[in-house]
Length: 227
Image (tube, rainbow, N blue to C red; front, side, top):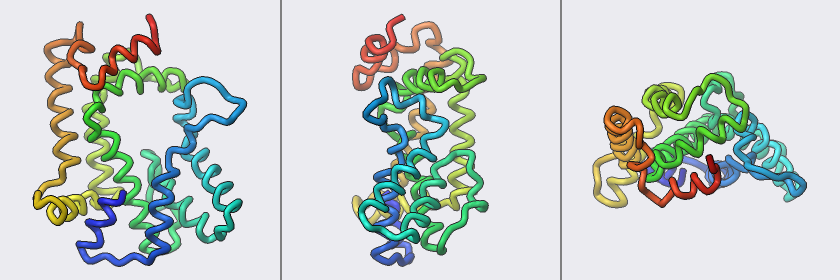
């Protein structure tokens, strides 16, 4: 999120200190809906379908307890709603143009951060099991889920370009100014992962986990979800 904001400012956009604070506060709290209450147990992944509403509730409680205004809460709520993949952005009631841009940047940062993670592919088997626990229907087997990832990738790229206003392009400004690299490294990482996933799905369907080696996550998967 901070990199997108930096790139946006380099591109000529202007934000007040309040805009910046609310945008970054929303970023830090955007997945708080996965946090369990003291009397709860089990994986937070079961809140996948409702985590945005829970994140908004968490933010509201935190802001009101710490003296922030209802206007601040409304601004952050609009920003957080942009992280919902199925949310129609034009239906969100933004408080200002700057508030809308912050929302689109957080929605973009959320997707880029997940999919450009160098262990994104290794995390997909975990995500599949969390979705099953959350009661999501129609995802089939793990292989079905992995096969569908290329389709999800297309949906994400279209959402970045259209619904979220193409603000991912600000990353190129950030990387050029910060590292003299004229490329969006997040998109490059995502495309690399998708190419590798396509290769192992084509050639190694029976032993796919053997090719997901980063972070020793497959060993952790077997420990957390013993067959």
